Image (cartoon, rainbow, N blue to C red; front, side):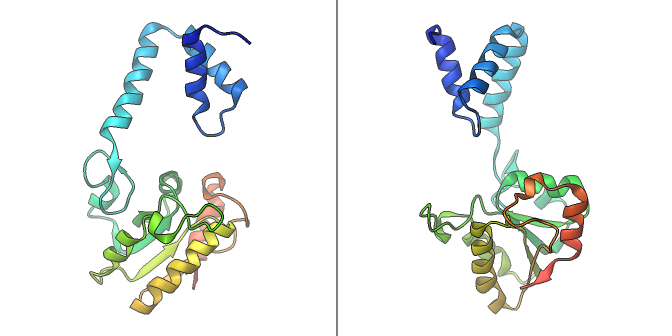
Length: 198
């Protein structure tokens, strides 16, 4: 199918997003073409602002407007617990549930033999550094119930337990092979409440 060069480039740009194929990218591109100029300008400005102004929290790896995210800066959070997640969107899921009041640590991935991702490739070193001040008494491993998530959880458990810190894993309720992002609130509440020590 022939499209003018500008439209073809817009379609290609949308296809760079995860899980966006040719048909969806084409539909989105045509939608943008039909938008009001001001809406397109706002959309473009929001994209640029998010890309330029957001950064990773230097403590936990979550998104932040400055050097430290709102959660790490919040004095009311329980600083004795750290919930370790794979991705930033997992923090949002737990915050939406509202049952956890501790801190987080975002790994930005998992250990994967098949993809050549080693412990050095994800955000583990800063987690270990955080545990050295002896404030943290429990680390809750909330990686996904996939083979990579389980591998990462076991690796972290073996790394952390010798320091005398309690290491727990989210309890059943999360189906094996499922992503935390898609779990409902009741499932996540039960998983947090029934976490198990590793």
